[in-house]
Length: 239
Image (tube, rainbow, N blue to C red; front, side, top):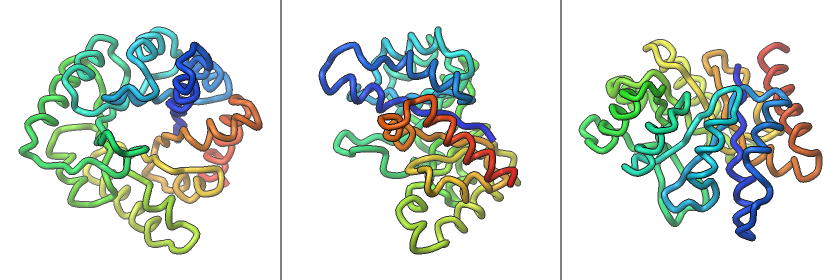
């Protein structure tokens, strides 16, 4: 089980004052020092937090692997092919949303998405699609020729205290994806309180977690926040 730490909200704090601190590059280094297996950033079309210069700097400085989240926007796809992150995770975007609200609405005939996938893969970049935990959607992802999917855990994050239904759906989706040859990742809304049941799903090999880690870093420091999350993930997998 790999823990990729999303450092978008380090940049959110910086952009609140349009200054030069805190620095996402320093945050990535601290996260890696604490045991992160990879660093995730989302370069949004509106550049609300992470900036192009951050992505370029991180591509040069990250010692583990860089996972770049992006919409299928031509300029961002071009940037990705230039800096060549280890992985590009294609996600949906809406300008008015606070954070990503759901998975990609996949269609085999989506020329824009198919073009982005092909361009990224031609550059030697591993491509993952951020999708809802639906068997039908997983099948479309497989037909689009990607090696990996990231299951959106938002429904689970909002309902885990009241119901096991979303967790059951995640388990079913992860099993199906693995059975048809896809690598399975997961993320969105995972916290120190709810991460372990998801981390315990054997088919899931990677978690992407950001907001909860950065939020608690205010109190514990970033290295300690990453260490605590990593411990929870490892313990869930190896009780």
